[in-house]
Image (cartoon, rainbow, N blue to C red; front, side):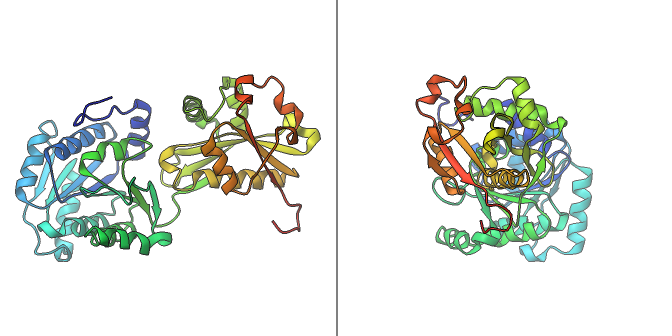
Length: 377
């Protein structure tokens, strides 16, 4: 285990996913309080995104903090300072935003100085002004909740989130996030500055991701997705959620499978397959290889995939779908999404041909009937 103060190692696959996610876009980061550890995390984050040509606008609360950031980024020479703070966040005019547009266009990193109490609001206004794709509002307390809730859809939890932030003396964060989202940002993160690298480069994250509306869409898998599908299945096997599969089996699953995609980029946030050939005589299908990138689990990737799969099964005239899992977490997920637990003898016997005896000991089965057309669900 790393000692306190050392950054957690980040898997290269996760880092590469997010470098592509934010390739050639502008990210605004509010930094009202900067510790030495926070500055180090900012530096590692910006350097980590360099190969994706991500542009950054860092909003700080003093010229001193701006200078500290410049010292920590000696290898990034394309810097531009906007070191004369406006009287308030609302004082940013079209003239000021024009300067910002030109600075962002001409430099990989812009450091803007706001009044100390207006850092979050200024970041929201500047993000809307440049139509930034991604915004991060940092706070020493981290995200929403303890442990932080990974995902929040603003339209569904606005009042609860606002109340939680107000209790922490951070009522200014939500208006800033909302300004950025309504200005064009696809998502806003709330996390500690010290956790910036973990929040932006790992699937699990370290704070709360906020969106204005849907973040994902459902789509059929393509041959171009096969490497990503193999990676997701490998992750599921390593986590003990999925059984090992050969490459041919993974490709077969993908042929008839569905993917949950990030709306902006099309990156896969999760996959699922529908196995039917082994159960033709029974008129049922099996949920096969359901796995989501954990960063998107709170965004409803699993439920989106499962609902899409059940709909597809109904279109094919199946009377039910079933799932088998050894994971208690997966079991609770199926129960929350309309499945009921059944005995092993209630699923087709062909399911158990060549089934791993070690997994059979803890295997749990879940069943969901599919209404025939014209009958209520």
